[in-house]
Length: 515
Ligand code: ATP
Image (cartoon, rainbow, N blue to C red; front, side):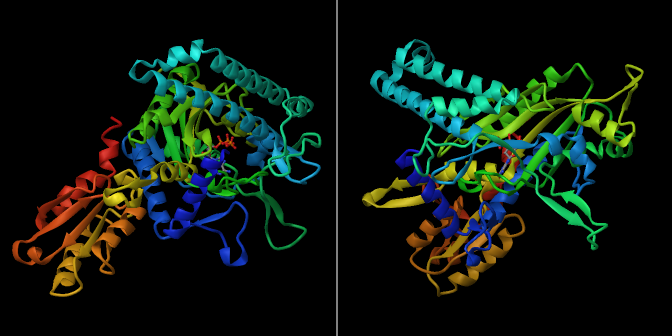
């Protein structure tokens, strides 16, 4: 990461801690690597993201239902899904620093640096040419940009092919040829690349002899597959239909860094859409569009997203793409969309000996459905929203303010009620207003310090509205409402507050953009 990016990222992490969003797990014991706890504001933001996802899937779609399956599953599940044999990451050790890395991530980080150079050229050119700048044309004609992007593409292609062929020696050769140094020691002295299984094992049962080996689920999807028939039958579902679920997943990540981007315990939001074989291309394209729309509705900037189609397909997929987001450390995967064929259901059939088929009344035959899935990490989405929202602004008088410009529908606290002074009956009126708003909105009450400082505190938490109660309020039942981003203030009637604020901060305001 360039120094500027590193500094920005450090600010994000410390802001998340200082304002009660995210703490390192078991911090008083010096923390546990790549495990984090959500604090009083973090949990609200996280719940709001989950709620937006869940409602967009389950509430808005007649053909999608939700479930909540257990974290523990029969161990053979993971044999059938391919995770026991193929859920590996290629790892490599640096002989000098003794640090362990994911070999593919080392190469991808190298490519990110080339991509950063391309972005820099584009930035420079766009400043030089102003309005007449045509980025597409520049990308395809500028010799330097062309050569960078050819280099990046050829590296990724070779990496994809070697991983697909499980040619770990070539991955090592690529790292040697590119002369990639250890980020810690700078040494280029690497071991060979080896495979490492990412599942956490545990045991069920008390006695050593009879205890059963279990895994903590590495994805939520299998809980959906094993319940496919239960849901199809009890819900009398007709194909095509989807099953959605959110929940914890666990991976023993080799290189767990970048804060909550890569955790060992994290939460996924997954939806498996069951379809007749042969229609997967159409549904894959549909879900790609739907999911991008879901992201764009947050108004965080169209240019922050891009699709990255996979060269190397996972063991279960016939097409796959990532929605990548521009994190502070560059474009990285935020969500995966995979066309999984009938891989999972047919393997569960094989391992259980039980039929997992659907009778299609239109085609008058039984078959195993195909599946298109969308899979997004809730914590990663949290990081995308949080990092994109944190900004520092110079305001009137040359002072600066830190403001968390969260999409209002996701903000932990929607409105803060601030009595101008702590006397003359203003706190009592402010509490009364707060009690009324609480039926519909999450509120905060703050009477400490000058009102300007209280505004700053709410800005840093991302609260979209502050309501100030002053002496005039006692006489004419009006208050001042201040909007976070513009800092505009307006005098409004107390009776109108719920409606006025509610409309702007409701998840409905996002959902309406999806249909
Ligand atoms: P990566 O290549 O970053 O390891 P992946 O391709 O293995 O991710 P999937 O198995 O497709 O990820 O999981 C779907 C989503 O779950 C990812 O897009 C990501 O948002 C999230 N996710 C996966 N692993 C982690 C993790 N260790 N920590 C946080 N989120 C994760």
